[in-house]
Amino acid sequence: MDTFIFVVIILVASILQTSTGFGFSILATPFLLIIFDPIEAIQINLILSIMISLALLKQIKKDMDIKILKRFVIGSLFGLPTGIMTIMVLNIDALKLGIGLMILLLTMMLILKFRLSQTQGRDLFVGGLSGSLTSSIGMPGPPIMLYFSGADIKKEKLRGTTLAFYLFIYTISLFTQIIVLGTNEVIWFSSGLAVPLVLIGLYLGQLLFKWIHPRLFQVVIYILLLFTAIYLLIDVMPRFFHSP
Image 1 (cartoon, rainbow, N blue to C red):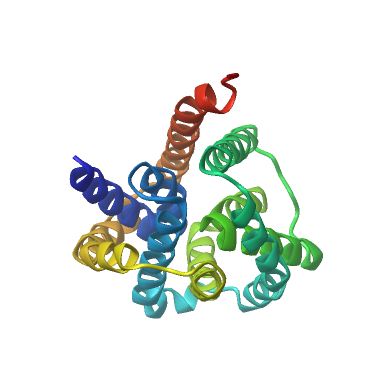
Image 2: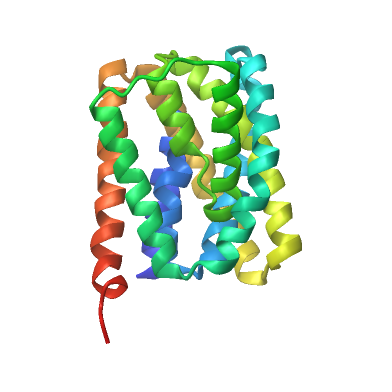
């Protein structure tokens, strides 16, 4: 059963990452926590996300906004230490609850059409927040997703800039976690098994990206976020608030 769940998670998340630019970590991390310990789930997510970003880098170069990308990178370097300290002190239920609430809040702000104009200072702040979330839970997407949606940035630029940034931040976060928290054979063996699934997802995701209508693109994002957030909260809240 765990193997089947793993296959579905990796395949669906790979398709969404390729077609949207941020779907993999948002979908994969919460559900990988069902099967693996937190550090294992997060590092598997980081390894596979690096692979996806590398595979797509050549195709999305023309869509990058280099100035925004540089500010994201600079900001992320300040957020990385905070994320590492967070993962060291939080237990699994607190981690799931935090992720669920964060995704739910993000989704509500998107549906309500929250708008935030783009500035250099906000680029740095969003980069820092994404860096912190990546080194802690392997999920840089939510702040960038909200920021770019609010700024009405085209989906091509969103996809290109976020994938390029993720390649940097995932790599730095993975090495930081390995140095500070260590790694194990389960992480690398499971990541190796997932490679064919990721390759299939890359192909299917590219097809989807070419044909998906912008409005449908937005609806898919909302459904993905709401489903993930509600699942996490239903799963963790009875245990988290249970009084002995």
